[in-house]
Image (cartoon, rainbow, N blue to C red; front, side, top):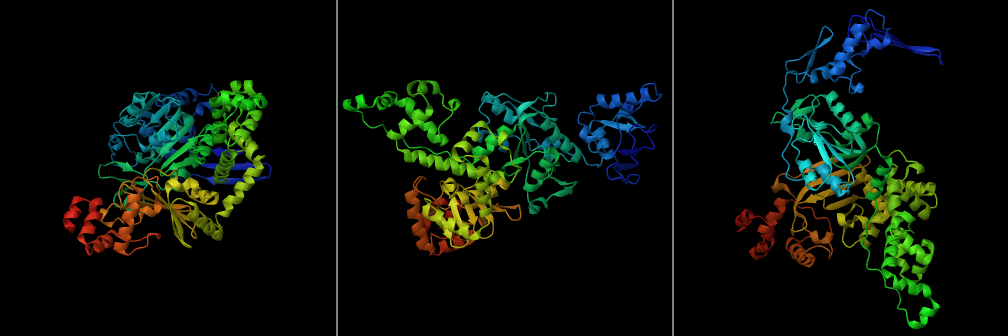
Length: 621
C-alpha cells in the first residue's frame, strides 16, 4: 500500500508528489521517498476521479481535465507522469500553463532552449528507395501482401515509388503531410525520424505512437556515427546542430537497439546498421529470422526416370505411372528437395492430384526414391538441418521462443529432422559455445580454405572470403559470422569481403569501390565487429588518396565472376611487378602502391592504369 502526500492537491491543477510511503504488509516494513527537492517530481492528473461529484471542486477539476483532453495531451499517458515531461508536452502542442490553466502560446518550439531548430530541412529529396524500404523489398515484404504506413514520410518520395508499384502505402509527416490520417497498418516505417527530434520526450512519443499503429512489425532506422565524425558539429542536448541548423542525434548500434527494447519491451531484430525490425506478430518474427539462415540452393535439373520398355510396363505399373505424369512428380520431388523432407498437404499445391495416383505422399516419395538420385535429397536434408541449427544457435541471443510459438512449417522441420525441439536446442547450444574454441575455429578455417572455391588464409590469424561464399562455410564458421552479424545486421550490397579473425573473436567486413568490375578496387569502408566487447567500429575511407588497394582480387573470386581469367592473368603480372604473394592478405597503402608503380616499366604501368582516372594517368605519363 502506498500513502501519497500532495500538499497542493486542491490548489494546483497538476499537483506534485511531495512524499510517498510504501508499506509492505508481508514484510511488515515501509519505505519513505522524498520529492520535495526534486526538479522533476511525479504529478497528478484527472483529480475529478478521486473525489465525489458533490464536492465543490468537482466541476473545476473536470474542466481542467477537459482542457488537456481537447488539447491532445492525454493521447499517450506514458508521457505525462512527471512535471518536466508534462510541461514539454504542453509546449509542443502550442500551449502555455498559466495559473493552472491552458492558454494558446505565441510560438514555443523548444521550451528548454532559445534555439529554433529547422526540422523541415531534415526531409531530403530521394531519387531511390530509402535504406529501410530497400531492406523491406529485399526481404520480400513489398510484394503486395502487406499494407505500409510511413510515419514521418518527409516529402513522400518513398510513398510515390511504392504507389507506382501498386502497393497499399500511405504516410504522415508533421511538416509536409500534416493533414493525413495516422492509420494502423501491417508494416509501420519510422525511418530516420528519431534522430532528428531534439526533445527526448517527443522522441519517445514518436516511437510509442508508431508502435501503436503497428499490426505486424515496426521498422526503425536511425543515423549512426562515431565520435570523430560527431565532434565536428556543435553539441546540443544529446545530439548536435548541423550546418543547416538541423538537429541530429547520432546513435551507436548497441545504443539504439537498447533504446528500442527498453521502451517497447520487445526484441529489436538487427537488420542492418541503424535498421531494426520489431515484430508484434511473433510467428512473422520467427518466419523472418528463419529465412535469414536458410540457404537458397539452385538445384540442378532433376534426374530423368529410367527408360521404361514394354516388358517392364507389365511388371511395374507404378513406374509407368510416374513416367506418364513426369511433370507432376518432378514438382513433388523438387518440393522435397526445397524442404529437406516430405511436404505436408498444404505445402504441395497438387496434393490431391498426386494422392489420387499413389495414395499418399510417403508412398510417392518411396517410389521416386527408386527412380531418382537420392543423394540430392540427402544433401538437401543435411543443408536444411544445418540452416536450422544456425537459426536456433543465433536465436539463443534473445529470449527463447517456446515450441508452441513456432510456425507450423518449422514444427514439421523439427519433427522430421531432429525428432524433438529440445534436441535441436541442445545441439545449437553446443555449437554456439564452440565458437569460443580458438583451436577448433582454426581447424574449421583450414577446412574452409581447402573446400571453398576461393579464399585467403593467414595461418593462425584469419580467413578472408567473398560474401557470396558465406553459405558454403562449415556450419561452425557460419554461426561464428552470424553471431557477429546479429549485432550488425544483414550483409548489404556495399560489403564485398569477410574476414574471420581466428583468435580475437572479431569479424571484419570490407567494401570496395566497384569490386565487380575493377581489376584493382580500393577500400571504401571497413566494419570491425568485436563480439567479446559487444561493439562495432566503423571506418570510412573518404579521402581517395588514402584508400588501400586490393592487389590480389583474383584470390577471392572464382569462375562465376566476370572476367575471372583476365583477372588471374592480371594478378600474376601485378604480383611479379610488385613482388607480392597472391595467397596472402596484402597490406599496401595507395601511396606505396603508386610509388612502386612509377618505378616500373611504363608499358606495364599503362596496362595497370586502365583502372585509374585520366588525371592519374596523365600524372604518371
